[in-house]
Length: 123
Image 1 (cartoon, rainbow, N blue to C red):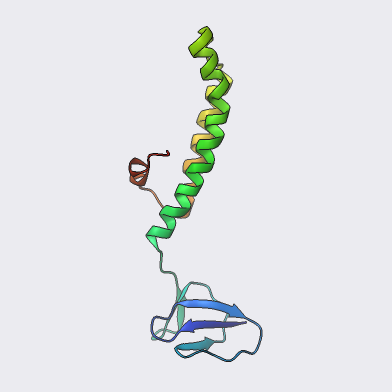
Image 2 (image 1 turned 120 degrees about the vertical axis):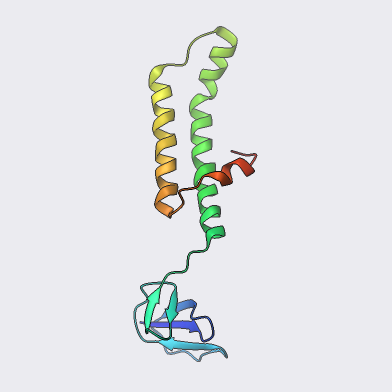
């Protein structure tokens, strides 16, 4: 496995098993990457976390779960509004389970600050 990295920043650009011609500004590291950047001094891989990318992934997770929860509650909210029929407890429990699952997936990304949600009208 060959890791192709930027010779200035050490950023992993891609990996390959093929023999390739390098473009200017790239070098080959002949190890399997264990991070997304190469430290030239210690000769080790490490990770640089792009917070904007993490927030984008978290938003995608939030959008997905918001859709699931909205669909789950849609008919029950109509019944409550029009006929005064209460939302069943199992539906409320499922909503809480989905919210918890969503939050756990976002925390697993490495985010523990949900302030990005306040800036997004769709959530």
